[in-house]
Figure 1 (cartoon, rainbow, N blue to C red):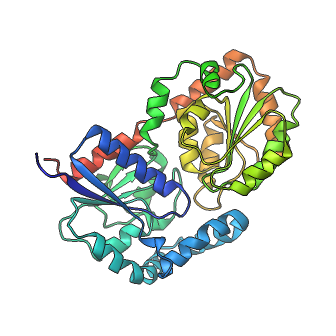
Figure 2: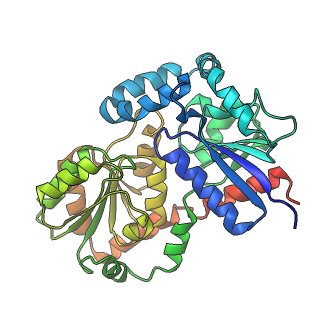
Figure 3: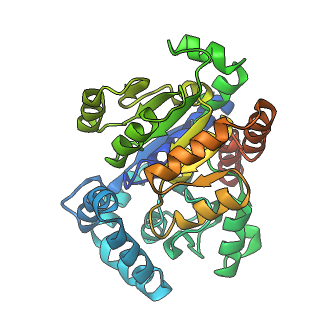
Length: 375
């Protein structure tokens, strides 16, 4: 048996979406092409001794506490000359790390972060395909559109069109959807009905159910939304997912709201979403993709200025959900939705599911295999 080909996936933990997408594609490769490929996931920005690492460490606190500052930085740097200067500055400390991880020579390098593909080009061995997998959905920073990449994998028609407007040749663009982990497909295939899933999770089987997601790091506004839903005259149960934010989970538990179930970081998100009628979340692309796949209409509480603004417009314009920036807006939207006839609620869920692409990770995997020259 031939030795497996080595794929190198570059990402950074600036938010959970880059890692999640890379892990989803790696899992899809392992399933579809068992023993044929060895995938190494590498985060060169993890080291805070380099400038890029220090900037990465600031991402979480800034986006959670002062998102307007992130928005200002996003728009100020979303110019091609600025992008090149910034890439040159952060690349100094990263190139050494990339040279090290490029030995032994990989069969392909895929970047799941807008800055790493540009840095990699300076140290890549000749002839190794270099791919960008865009993890934003509709709009994205110009750093994503590397005109020298062999291929850019886009998650939507809007993303393809934006790349074309920025000068990327059509023959280097592939549309493949937002990759989510194959375990979502597993759960969806085994799904029968929401009542059975709720019983499996030890929830009330017939109660209207709302999932409240705060992202991998959890966000404090989750507490306000949980309290608002708990005060609702509706007899609903709320699944509050706090991620790694243990303090937030403790505070919501201490609030002791009836009907609010508090979770930390979970590994059964597909089952929790399939048990839910509605998904309440910020407009992050990964969470949107997971909610759509599980047929949950979306109630978007906010967005990160810059790359997530287009997500809100897309969801609202396509009738996949609503924008609810305040707790009273959320309560109104939830009450209105559950007051609809059941047939209309089922139609909403079907429309959402039809907009999803739960097999996107496999599509991306196939693209990478073709570029690497299987065999």
